[in-house]
Length: 374
Image (cartoon, rainbow, N blue to C red; front, side, top):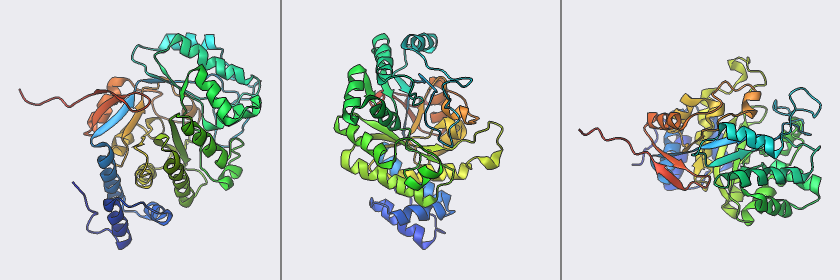
């Protein structure tokens, strides 16, 4: 069923709604206008229309674990509270054996994916990162390794002297099956300079994903929003992602990441509003017409807003995670992870059908609603 915009929508919103209903691609100007509009109900309605066309009532989740081999990092991004200098209190670099001991303590048989990211640690060679994957794959061959950001891949090229393609093929041989989406932040050179994002630049981030896609590696991608960037910066970011997807069709999902304040005690004025979070998810769904899924990341926006996001264009509720560290180091107030039953409850509570998936969105189990018939 096609839902038309509310009767009181202004002519510009009505024009955009007509484009969405006809399946036409939105422009930079359209996206910026949607951010400027206060008609969030029409925005959500349109995003829900697009999502229902793509995914119906299904919302996906995965049994996964987040792993972090090291928090030592040469970069000093202004928004990051996870990183440490090598000699700082709390710095760590785990061996493969130490990580396996941690995983053995927390894993259960249904875990299907390890989500692996960490610092750019210049004190260990590239082989350390290769061996880390090998150790995990040898111990847990049934678990998919979704490992490293494009920024980490770029870092590996610098410490190894290898090309992007050579780094990726070496990691694939060690067990890599997909790349995480982190490191994108805002795809703007001016933003990256102001926020001291002293890691892979815009072109380099996109080139890593392009190369991965050319090698047959499906990847994820993100946008970290809510600091100094403008609404136009965000839309330009989405368009860059959309253009690469037109070229390669290698992105599985887009994940808007709501910026977290550095202090857990930060007040409400230091956080993105729920209004801004829902807008960003909906606009992402409308702009990224060639990406199948938009993720509502409960770690950053909370479980209840995640439920709302499922009617604002999101079709993925992420996963169990077990113990998230990066956003929580920056002040996230949300749970560090959820159980499968909690994720199912969350999705069903939004009137949607939970679907357990693997890394590549193959359906493992569909949790159909129970019949009320006696």
